[in-house]
Image 1 (cartoon, rainbow, N blue to C red):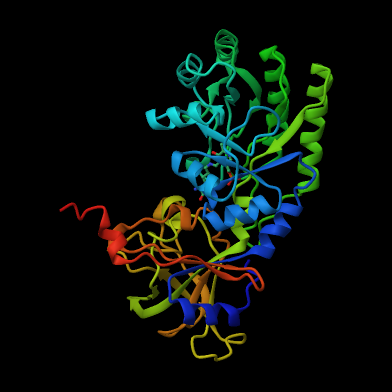
Image 2 (cartoon, protein in one colour; image 1 turned 90 degrees about the vertical axis):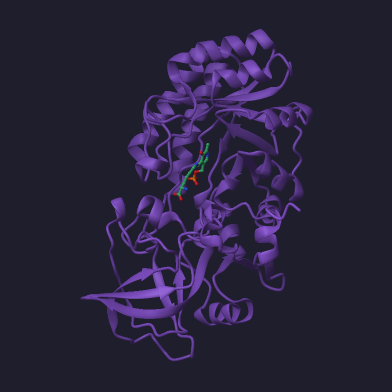
Length: 415
Ligand code: LLP
């Protein structure tokens, strides 16, 4: 739930217009501090890759995981060093394939790679002996808050299948690659039963690999409490569990092993809100709709996964809503799609939330939208990317201005 006050949100919406993303830097710092026991915290920037957010991460000692050339470029512009020749990498490129351009760049800049297929090893190896690589293993099981965020098991395309680890190690040896470590990320949405299982799998895999390693990565997937009933992750317990795994691996290898964590959502989800203005209010039979000026082209999670986001209403005219009567309402956007509904469950079932009755001109705030919010936005319906604003004391500022129509059309104006 956002820490930004209603008053600040109203002021920013007034100044910047809506839809508007607002992030609170203090929340990001506080979340990062909860993970300080890990040797390396590597931000999965796909969750929120604005250059200014990445710069903030860099300032507080967080490293970065990039999954595309675009993300590598963002990391570089935020001041991260792409090249790694030894020790802890500032940037790791994680993928299941190399497109041709990315392979070229990875080789040219000696970017550490977390490989998710044997083909990646065979494409990189001959061109770049000595290149630093991680092997991402699919341990044969996974877990996620939705089927679409489960990244393990036979239905997932991610990682090298666990029984093929020997072939991967053989390729590492054949090409003289430098194996940095093994990596497991079985999905988004942590659950402790699976975690135990992942830890045991990591130990087994290290033994099977029969190769020296510098580090292990526990991947990402730490959840956040989107609903009041969700338990926050116990990060101390999480660390203890992985620290024990790391210790057993260090004993096995006979030297210390670095422990990496690769969270996305955990670091940024609670720092961000999407602010929209109510532009229409109407009934469809007995169902009340509140229509706002943000759509799933801004916040896609409800439409894509049936994800829940807490919603609050901020009065546009300063009236006090704290004691206002609540009414079930379906909050929806402006897109020409029936699925453009923020209050929906799995399989697109249209739902409602109990909210103060909102009038045109009031603001609707979608909470915990800092992860996979702006980064999953699109230009669908030819809507422009919204403004992003970072609240950080005296350094508060727009960190991405609203896209202009010229920019929206620029790549198509070929003559
Ligand atoms: N590492 C790898 C290799 C990943 O694939 C991911 C997420 C992460 C780390 C970070 O996971 P996190 O800590 O954020 O759960 N769009 C979805 C989430 C997709 C996650 C994709 N990979 C959502 O909105 O929930």
